[in-house]
Image (cartoon, rainbow, N blue to C red; front, side):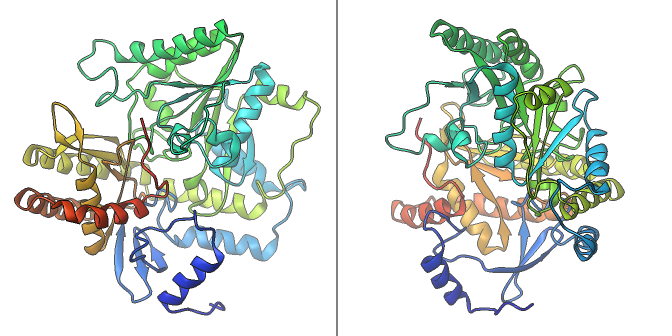
Length: 467
């Protein structure tokens, strides 16, 4: 390495001096300085190993040798603007399209999930001629201005923010704490009817809906799994209104759900979005993302008269890395591993639910799992401070886990896809020990400020959402 290795204290001081203060770090009172990583493990400057249960970015494992080799070899040959012909671009587009329904056949390569979702909105607006967008409560779709407007997870944090009149927030299809729950006879229809009501209200005000956008599984919203049939019913309402359905796979795509390569496929073979966005895992940490849509939508975008190009999106190095990621997923059966290990993890967590009243709900698919903590299983009182305490104590045990949801009380598992049953055993064993200690020695009020500080800094989106 050519860069100088600073003492941790100097790194902290320089970060405070030169990096924007809103760019938070995990555990800011005692941040971890990670200097290398491999597989599902990260190592600090002293060689201490941490089990990574957070990083859905390092999808096939940190520093995977096949991915590193592919990027390095291509970088030695060429990296240039994607407006030159190069086989990596078309080969990767072809490989990616083969994982999707046939009608999703046109790719636009960009550099981040935010950029992908922003472009998806442009495609929908151009195709439909309508500007209104329906989003889900607690949704997060990215950090650029157009996406903050459709991300309640973000704009609810702003004290004096006014919601855009062209943005309509539908109920999150949360079967545990939402308006329609497991005991409802048809929650999919009930939640879809809420979307239809928003469409009708928009029409009454002279607005027209261009797009409905949803994470295929809500991540920042608390690991929410929509009821089967919900997307089909929503798509029907949205299409009747002249809009398009955008499925955001930035957090959950590329085999993470185990049974399918894409999380939207959990809804059934009869559901196909009009636009799919992807990011994070696509390049295993390399800045890359993609928007895939139909030929009809792509032609409408072209016919607008404005040329579209992206200097770095789809460059030869990015596509070489993307191809390597697909190869690793297939060769190492990481989708199968997500199914097996994810199921094992959920069974272990269900045992914790039986043992500890604080564990209110276990939900997930594959290696996308949430454990919601509540102080009262009837009232569903969020156990926010307890979730914070667990995460802080896990860090002391060299396990990195996060929590999220509108009340920051959902323990959130989305580790690299090489996560093992032994890893699951270790993290759940430590959670069990912490929960047992919590029950025997309740948190004192004086401990809450330090715990809250630790947890607040653990999450990238710092303030608690207000509802």
